[in-house]
Image (cartoon, rainbow, N blue to C red; front, top):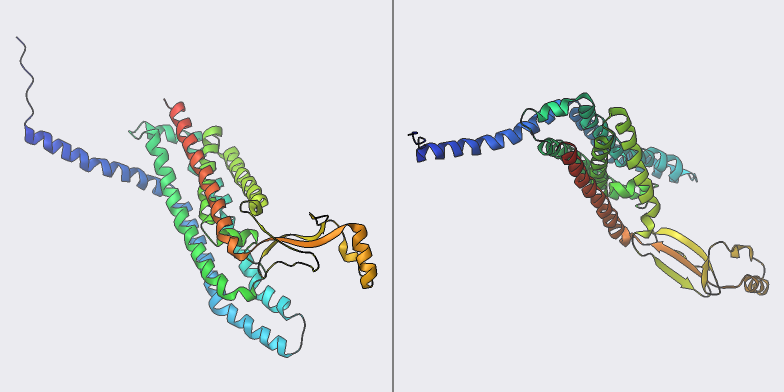
Length: 339
């Protein structure tokens, strides 16, 4: 007769379950700590970049802005006609535009990092498979990579967005670029964060497809840059624009509006290519000239300042949708290759 298996006491079973429950969070946090330790150099560089741009914005706002206003007042009192260009635009606007360009296009660096050092290098060197052989599943490995990087990127870009908004709005009169400028538009809201997260997702997917460091780095940066160009080109179409018309007078868009098209109406249809400005003779000759051209009125198509948030949020939604799709495909591809 075979002996019956020894029955584990109930207290021992509860103790084993408790130890497993305590060990699970430690394992998850251990993977995150490993990712942060492995990429601590990139994290330090990113933190210093955010800190440097933030400090530059604070200096421009608290020191340079007041100096620029004083110089403009002195220039105006002297009766010069180039005060805004030489003092305001060059002294304050140019640095602000430079910061906006650097911060808004930081997503290209994020894409290159994701495709190269974060994912591509570990797949190429075999360190990813080594990690998977140590009890870390591929899905958990990729989740830790994406979560840690997304957290650092989101915090850094959010800080830049908040500080830039704080510095930009009170000193609008000193800045030549308005809200519809490419870099300023992205950095005035959550679209900047969405660009960075989308770049992270596309860089990860590219690295999983190519599994080589340098090709993945280059393709990731080029792909996200191309996506940004497409969105910038289509930005004006993301929300319906307004059109004003008049049968007798020229039509202009409101102050701080984004001008899209302006010109004459030929038989009731917009015709911006018609040179109605050439009809500048006497009233009778001007009317005959306009009649010969078929001009029946004037129009202006534009986005008012109030359209900023609809345009901005639609673009943000598109970027987040692309990022979610890229992440889903990345996990599916990883699961297929490591089955």
